[in-house]
Each structure stands twice: as C-alpha cells, then as structure tokens.
Image 1 (cartoon, rainbow, N blue to C red):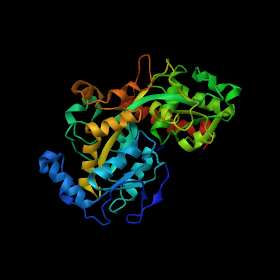
Image 2 (cartoon, one colour):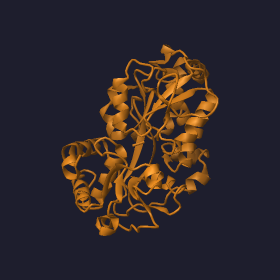
Image 3 (cartoon, one colour):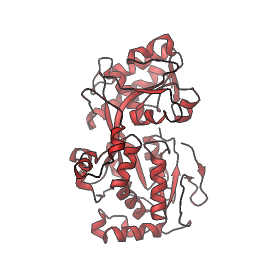
Image 4 (tube, helix red, strand yellow):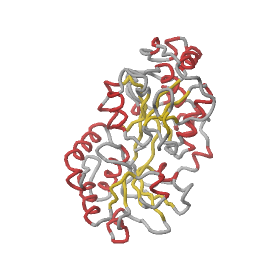
Length: 367
C-alpha cells in the first residue's frame, strides 16, 4: 500500500504538492496522447510547453514517505509550474488500475501509474507506449520492448522491527510468543505488491521457492493462529504509534522509519534475499497526456533517479549512472547492506503467486 491527503478544489482529487502551481483548468493537449517519444513530436521543449499548458498531473497511490516521493513531487511541480493532484495515497497497485477503469473519461482519471510488476503485466491494455529520452539506460529485461511499462526503482524485501522491544534474527523468530500481536504486512497480498512479496519472503525462508509461495501462506497461517499476525496495513503512522512494531516491507520503506523511530532496525534474511522493482506506465486515457510524459522524462532523468536513491531505493538506471558519473555516491553508500544471492520473480512466477494467494490467502488468515 502506498499517505493521506486533503481534497483539491479543482479536480476533486487529494492534493499533495508544495511550490509554484499553475492555475486550475489547464486544457489537455490531445496531440500528445499517442506520442511514443518526445523526439517524435518536437522534442523536449515542445513537450515542456504542452505540459505547462495543461498545468496539472494526476498521480495515485504515492505516499510522500514512499521512496522519497514527497521531494520528487515538490521538485517536479516547482520546476515546471505543474500542479500535482494526488489520489488515494494509501492505495494498492490494484487500486490504481481500478481507478483507471472507474474514472475513465473524466478529469480525475490517473495520468500515470507506479505499480507492482504482477499488476503491470496483467494490465498492459490500459497503458500507452512511450520511450523516455534515457530509454537506453534502462536494462532490456527491466522494460517492455514496446514501451508500455518500464521499471523505475527497487530494493529487497525485509523485516523492520522496533529493536527496543524485539530482536529479529530469523523469520522463524516471529512465531514465538514474544511477537504476540506484532507482525504486519504492507497491505493485502492479494492486491498489494509489497505484501505479496512479504509472503514470498516467508516462503523462501521456509523451504519454498519463487515458483512456490505456498510455504509463505502456511507460515502466515501459523502466525495468525499464534495471535502474532496484525491484520492491518502497516504504514508510517502505525509504526510510529506502535500498532505494527514488526513489518514485512521493502528495505527502503523500512529504512525510512528510522527517521521518526531511531530504535527501528531492518533485517534482510540471508536465506531469503528477494529483490523486486516497481514500474511506471502512462495510461491510454490520461487527461493530461503531455504532463504524463514530462513526468516520466523527469523521473528517468539523473535528478529523478538520484531522488529515488536518496529515498533508499535503487533506481533502475543505477548501473548506467555509475558508469557515466551521474550517480550520487553519498546516497549510494547509504543503501542497506545485503549479502547473499538475490532472486526476483519473473512474469510467470508473479502470476502464479498472485493466483495462489487469490485462492488460499483468505482461508489461511481470514478476510
């Protein structure tokens, strides 16, 4: 799950932005709706002009404390004078897709998505192809060849915990009585990518594989039966107030909790090193097609990539930026240490895991 925000006056969407904002009511430049690269339609200057004329961008499910999105939104808005309308900050990847379908044809529809790969692979019919200027810096296996989606940032699944109350040295520790009413996921694993991968981490640590999430579901069934599983979505607020003192989540999200809770620590099991990336996509029916494309250009620029890195996430262009000298070395040095051989889910494995969860999760832990 990805904050909470106030309603915006112009679009009826939650507004999360600081900086110089354009006035409400900017018109959509439909000539950009089918453009597959800035170079094919007048270049970056033409794109910037069209995006500024639209004046707005609709994003969804981007909490300000998720991979540094607060700083990213603020900088993009200030740089281009474009108002960023934020909807459902706590939403899951599936919530994003649901909004594309339910708001289609309205001014409130999402322009862009930041979603888990299982959801991205299952919904490519909703996406508009587009190749950012830095397309060649994105590894071939981390983007759709036709430009329908492209991975943006990633990390490793981890267990965050309040070290003033607990010590975690293995996934098995969480089944002991010391963790009564303590352990949570970041969302519903049948809808949220981070939660699905949390269950997969438990599977890997309990004899499963990236092709078999079953042992992970069995683990959470045991955790629930022991009274240790907290069936609420873990957020920065629930961590701060002690509702979810132990959380399965991406390392960059768990690491962010140290700011408000200095006793918070992050553990990545050496026998279950699970990597994963989210992906960007532009919606086919984006009400602000030029602003959507400018947003992607910004995210895949050195500025956008380094802002994700500052948030503790590993940007998809990291290898290329390391080679060309544009990577912020201070931010890179602060990344959580991981030792061992990581694994990641491919499309078929992610689909199989999602299908298994859809059929078995509710029965294992209750609805």
